[in-house]
Length: 182
Image (cartoon, rainbow, N blue to C red; front, side, top):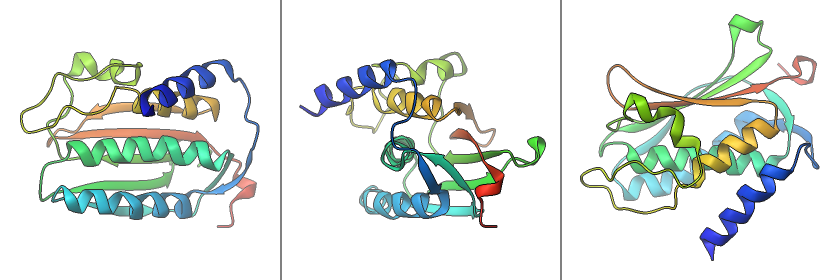
């Protein structure tokens, strides 16, 4: 049932071209709430979720869709990070575009993704070959859903391997700077 629900979500997001419930969303509040929820799962796996930087930024969007996208990325990172490490969450304005974009970065300390497969991890049903010690769960829809939600919000998502190991997923959202309180 869960997989059917996720399939329907992917199909629906593919047909929607505009947001229905766009409101001002306080990103630090939303991210803190998601990180707190993910911390329980992280503790069960012997790791933790750590917000290492968080600027006071807002964007316009659908809060429940944004929650789903960010939660999919963060829970994926918790699943793949090594025991005893922290999944690092960072939120900042991008100075290279005069702060007109918000960058949310989620970094794990796992094995990373083969370079040739980085672009495919956002495709429906795509799953990496099972890594040693990781249970084979999920249908390969979480990151596909996240990508569609981010795109619906006028943003983009990308993944890159960190030189010291692990995967970094960045979600970039356009901002209405006048809407920020800070």
